[in-house]
Image (cartoon, rainbow, N blue to C red; front, side, top):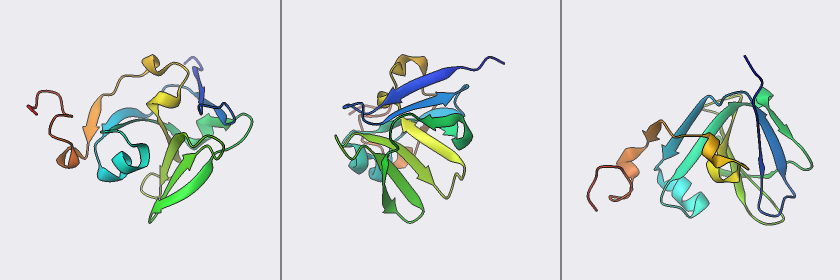
Amino acid sequence: MSNIIHKGGCQCRAVRFEASDPPKFVCNCHCESCRKATGAAFSTWVGFNEDKVRWDNASPTFYASSKGVRRGYCSACGTPLTYASDQWPGETHFLIGVFDDPNAFTPRKEVFTEDALAWALHGKDA
């Protein structure tokens, strides 16, 4: 299997990372917590095993957004970057927009759809 490298980082480039190999998953999360953390209607997450992630210059700063959850962001520009949870130990989930090539990923699943905004799911009327 080839070693695919996906690069990305924050808006100001203070925090940069590389994630290798294909991701474990790519999904759209519709939970209220993700909406509040990102300011978006839903968040698209790309999940990797922690051992496949390398931080280049600086690591993100972390915020405990709820019990067992750490959200990573750039302390210089505020870009939200990652999600990690006790529920999925050993994984780092990146927001798709922080990758240099977000087109490399396609969401295959919708999660927490019960929290979704009425217009945010494909095939639903607003």
